[in-house]
Length: 78
Image (cartoon, rainbow, N blue to C red; front, side):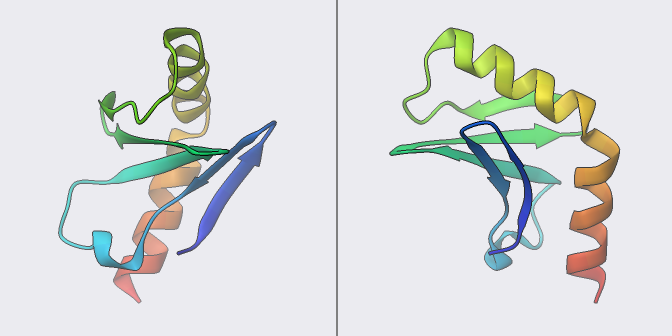
């Protein structure tokens, strides 16, 4: 379960079993867990986050989209 980013209280990661799905990232803060598709950036599930946090999370994913996609491709192509 590689961690891609840690920004503020958020941890961005994916599971090794995510192979075969479109590129996405899971976002965790405390007991909340969201899933975000990366290209294009859109929310798949909010997992307990409120609207303002979802906006922050989506903004972070947009800002780091290339980095997340690169990490995904590196991990799943090897």
